[in-house]
Image (cartoon, rainbow, N blue to C red; front, side, top):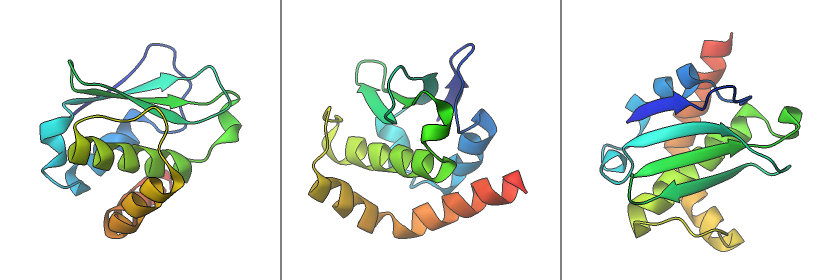
Length: 122
């Protein structure tokens, strides 16, 4: 998976953070998503958008940047990747039960990714 940052984007996750997580992700996820782009969002909510034609997952960081943590960003990214792999699409809104089901399935991957991001920051 290729990881890029939109020019001038203020994002809580760095390109380096996401690139360090990619080897920890299930190999099957790379068939559904070829590229992850980190964008600066225009709302107060962290969100992901999947562009199926390009197989691009955009992660939009909220403004102000302090309204979300790196851990929030990692969770959002992993849930979006998991949903896209399962469904081939990412609904605009995920139900709390669907979000929780994917989080429950991602416990080990989430733990490893959070450890990687935290260890890189230290």
